Amino acid sequence: MSPDYIHHTHLQDEAGTTALGAALAHVLEPGMAIYLHGDLGAGKTALTRALLHAAGYEGRVKSPTYTLAEPYPVKLADRMVTVIHFDLYRMASPEEFLEAGFREHFNENSICIIEWPEKGEPVLPAPDIHISLTVAGHGRDVELRALSDKGHQCLARLKFAPNL
Image (cartoon, rainbow, N blue to C red; front, top):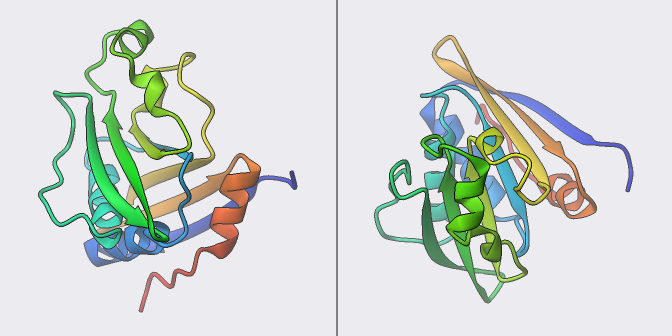
């Protein structure tokens, strides 16, 4: 694998977050794990919601703060895939993740998006992409970092112009 692929951008508003989520939906592949980092209100759930809607999910996308995980069936490149949105904020220990059987969701038929992944370390599977969101004025600064070959290929295909 080549060195980490890192992309920095600034999202001026929620429309920028929506555009980034939509762009990601078109390049993700089954079997990926994406870690979302950022403080409360940084836009992690908004990014996930935009990604899911761009991938064709038409229902309500809610934060899994209390359920810890919400599955969403979508069709990517003519293949049904389950995107599982995890929010580990309220998890008391990494063992809860294992006891709930969540590790089984990390497979070639799903894409796992994890908010607050630090709450699940060290039992979480390794991520393909880290996305860090930081509030900056009225917008967000975003860093996308590929940490695997699959993540690198995904971000290399990403077509995103935040200010259009």
